[in-house]
Length: 64
Image (cartoon, rainbow, N blue to C red; front, side, top):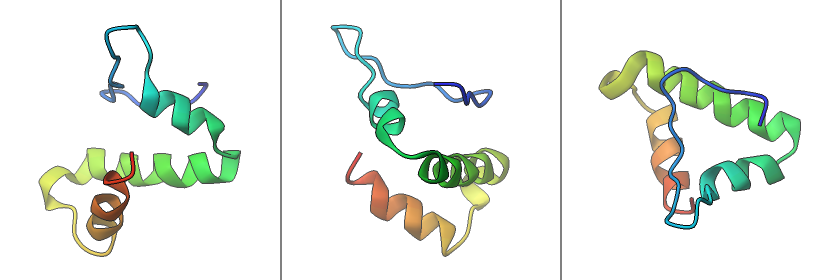
């Protein structure tokens, strides 16, 4: 994956696979950009992140 954010770590299972990174790699560039924009916002604001972005991240977290 070309886009790396500082301080973002991907889960790696016992076999060395990274399901989140693999999922992100399946997305089109526009979808990846949107997710990374949300992650940058979360990285900058942390626990202070407000609605509607926080709701969007929570809703989609259940599927990852």
